[in-house]
Image 1 (spheres, rainbow, N blue to C red):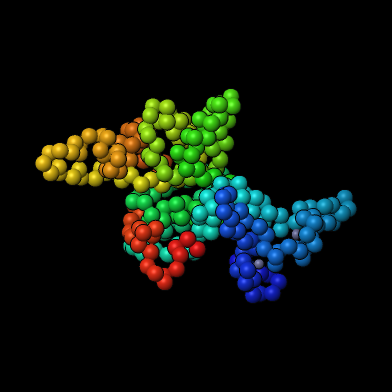
Image 2 (image 1 turned 90 degrees about the horizontal axis):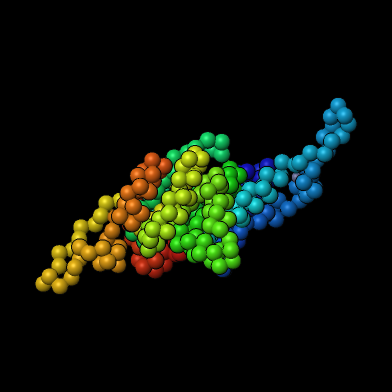
Length: 293
Ligand SMILES: [Zn+2]
Ligand SMILES: [Zn+2]
């Protein structure tokens, strides 16, 4: 759907994609059919075409229905409103690491297929370097360009949903189940949870089910692959080596945050990709325009 086949010139609204992503506040990302696609020239918008067969005329689904299916797939992905418009095209790297991360996510998204397991990516790096943008861009590509079902979850919010479900007698599998079986799942803010045994058991169950089913999972985390060097205390007043201090200072490694068992599973499922560079939320240059286009 790169170009409008009718006119030969791309639509100025959707660039020929056929869909437009809305910028909404307070809900997850939504797309709709572009006005240029509202009346299909093949089916007149009915979604059906009559095809002559040996048994006479038979109604068949028009190919334009793929567009609606892809839009529905995108709308079900739960991409946060803040990154509703995030795409690979709108990701403008400021550092070499961001360029490499973008390339890694693009090649990931291009090679994913719905009928076989693909190796995921795990993006790690300090906050504000575009990890969530890249996750959202990958899901957008999968949903809108390939029609592959996918979901985005922020792990802390997922845990809150599971806890809230207990209050209304909903078991954890009611919430985890669909996430355990969706073809591609993006888990953001991995390791930000408190790290209780229950939280780890939820993460372990979700990841193990997906791993055993051969499903593709991508992750983003603010925690580094290797632990940061612990600052030398001046005057010996700070217990900087204590877990409490490190947790507060975000000095722990991802392995320390999620535990060795989950960490080794992550290594089996994903390529680790560092995303580093200036903090978009703090270091945005005046006049450069918004990063989140
Ligand atoms: Zn259009
Ligand atoms: Zn049609």
